[in-house]
Length: 378
Image (cartoon, rainbow, N blue to C red; front, side, top):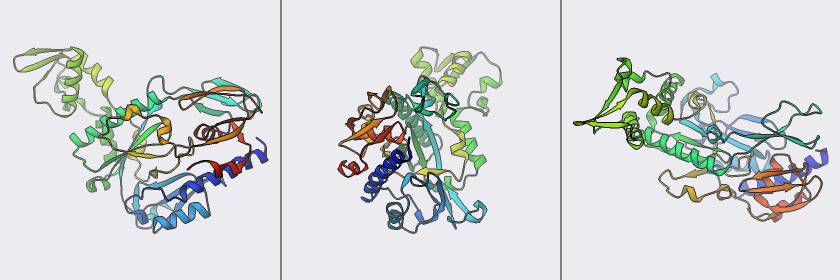
């Protein structure tokens, strides 16, 4: 992409993003002045860290007048001096307990294309470099069915956090791309060390954890596992799954299952979460209602009790409507959200704004007229 083409795209995105944030849509996190703020600057294409703002109005002034955030974050940690550049000087006061569910971890959900724009070629899977030595654009092929699987996994996680660990202040948000962020705000979770958070992860994923504490038959090398009618926690969940599979027999007041069947069930229903995210007490999180610069979709808070998630799709999380003229830089038919869009190099097309913005953010098209940002509904 030439410098002029790149400049047009940046001008377009800058106008569009600043228009969105001028409406002051963000959800203010608890104790904003105690959190470090970070942005990935659209203009500079670098992360700007160690920012601090006493109020949301100050933050809005910064992101609508000084630096345009392609990505906008706040720290999960609370600090005495969040703007200090050295972590030790920030004086850690505590951190939210956070979890990350990535839908690309599920079978069939992690496929990507590697797109070489200059060579006008693309490949299935990841390649290190293009024929001209350049770096390919990694283009995910994830679909919303995978996002629905992530939602189900996130709800399972929230149920365990409530039922087994007793947490009450729990929030969940769609990441704006391919997964979900879960935050625990209970006061007694804030002071947990990284090691204590790792132990929570070990329990949730049933790894690096003495499972014989839950299923004593494992430690005694028994061939059968017995359950009562009044199980709790993981034992209750494993029993429920065993019953659904018909792997249980009834002996008096007890349920009996083969140990091998139980081990298979444990492997199948253990949670899949990123331990690094949870253990890191200085992790950055995206602002709710901020734009995810990978997709143009919103980081969107959700009610975990909602039962209509299956009725949603990617466009449910787009703040943009209207249409836009784009000029493709590649010959390809690519899945974009719920459609397959055919691109022909240097053949301008007009498509709906969410699709055009997505392709612009991926660097696969150029915007013909950056002033069209003023015509898109925000």
